Image 1 (cartoon, rainbow, N blue to C red):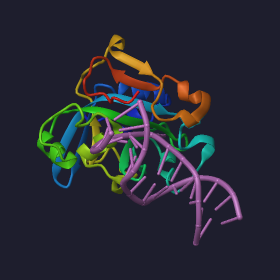
Image 2: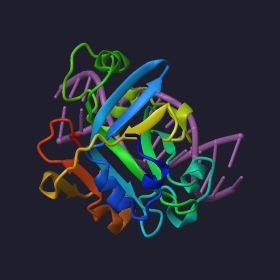
Image 3: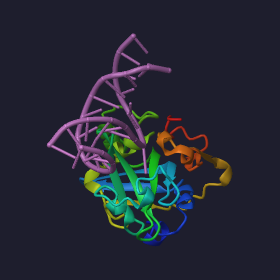
Image 4: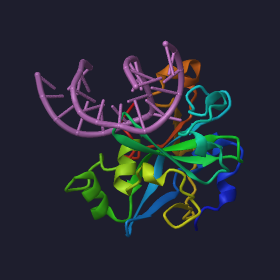
Length: 199
DNA sequence: GACATGATTACCT
DNA sequence: GGTAATCATGTCG
């Protein structure tokens, strides 16, 4: 079941971030179908969150797509090397986002290995936001792609993650955000070997 | 138009 | 555990 636009347009980005655990992200890029079970996410809120790129209503070429209605991809390049994949949520103008940090590889594993330049499946295949995009074939060319189309989408396969399997902790790599860096907006599946190693 | 830097990862010691 | 790689974006002039 492909998640509909209404799922992404709910108002609470932290709640969406939490509920994306156990969902499946698919890409159909260059004729190759790949997918993975989402095991780690982070929430970024437009309001009261200095770590969010849209903080204080910044509206630039990069953040433009964040202001669209929930259900589009926000992809950008970090450190000149890695594309990071975010899902825009909330209604148009609210500019909330969820970063996909790690997945458990499911479909198209040989293709994901090839894209990563690896020969066998290991924990580092998709454990990290820059690695997920490499494995799935997502690049900045997919900036603004609708998640209700047939290129990148998310499916609910009926799996519900109980609260005791969810670990909430501070987000990674945003020390510059001051007190907001302590918000427990990173969600991981407990005991999953596919979550990212970064603290 | 110049310049500093980051939602990171890989490889070296 | 330390650090180099590498470039689009944002900020300042």
